[in-house]
Image (tube, helix red, strand yellow):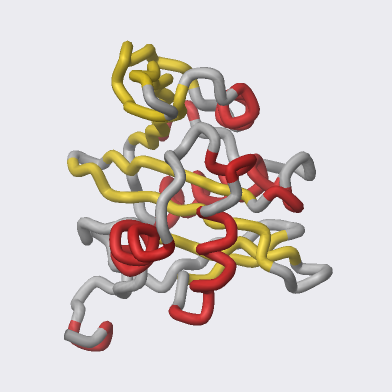
Length: 189
């Protein structure tokens, strides 16, 4: 089925001051692989995986055209406007009942520049203003204080901890759960 055959295709209209956003495509494989195999980036996200595992279980499943209500992640490549270089990925998945779960990964060279917060604010605006979600959630492995700080700064509230919820680095890790309700949303100025 082509995107022309889908009745509710919503081309992502995500914008922010310093970053560009576009859907993931086949040409992004080398960058996606490099980020996915960078241990400094993936420390709280995934154990080391082969290129084949990343391709099959992470990259390929994010390639199909996204439309409102579909059951796979909208994966956007985040790029720097000034350099044109890719900085990372962000997006969300519809969890039903008006809820979307947000996620983001920044390449090592793009960390510490506020791109996580900027991309998060852009996705929040897209989800609440254009798609009318009622709530956004995010799950972060306990210990990932940079992601926690980014979510809290964007208005998310830490709703709880799921104890020993995620197997990573040879042991069960806790997950921090965050949420932001539409009525709590304050557009960035």
